[in-house]
Length: 136
Image (cartoon, rainbow, N blue to C red; front, side):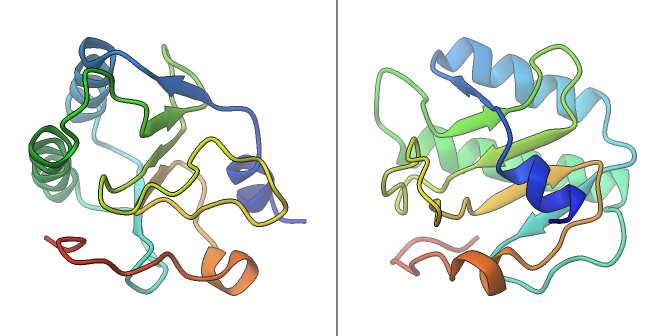
């Protein structure tokens, strides 16, 4: 199995508090270099995302999470490391499914950020469900 797939299926920390989610997103915004941003409804990126583009996308994702996930808790953002993240999973609020599931075919997040070059998760695990409001 590839490094990317191993990382994707590895141990993640669920971000439950909105303050922790905001802190993680702010950390990513403050350190926007050397990231791949994989929107799983688009082709797998070949190159790392430009820092300015990543900041723009993260701010847009933050708006989506805030406006469309009307819960007291976050629970749809996961990272492999709170202090020094190298892989982040972000589920779209309209396509959560069982995001905490750990089956052979886990739900596919809408956005994946990684320091490792992504591979086609849809070929391995199947596509995420397309629901209204899923795009930005």
